[in-house]
Image (cartoon, rainbow, N blue to C red; front, side, top):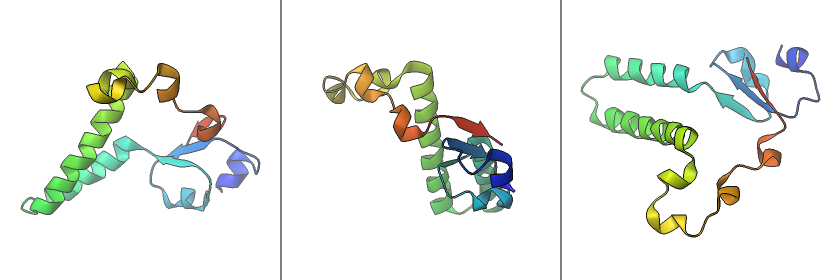
Length: 106
């Protein structure tokens, strides 16, 4: 199904929810953070006394928060002071060739 929609030569990043139909896409694929965080929240509700799960959920949320901060403020502002001097703005931006030429949200 996915190949029919995006074509055989799609060179970008597919962004999707967790619908199993997207699993056939074997190239770059970003799952939706909102859907993932909702599922993590539901796990916490189902297992309110599982300390290991809650620690894991907290670490997942921290990764998400760091990504949001990067988008809002740029990587230089959120890097630890000791690491800032070794980077320039250009160095900290992802390469367009590394991320593909486009993002397609499904």
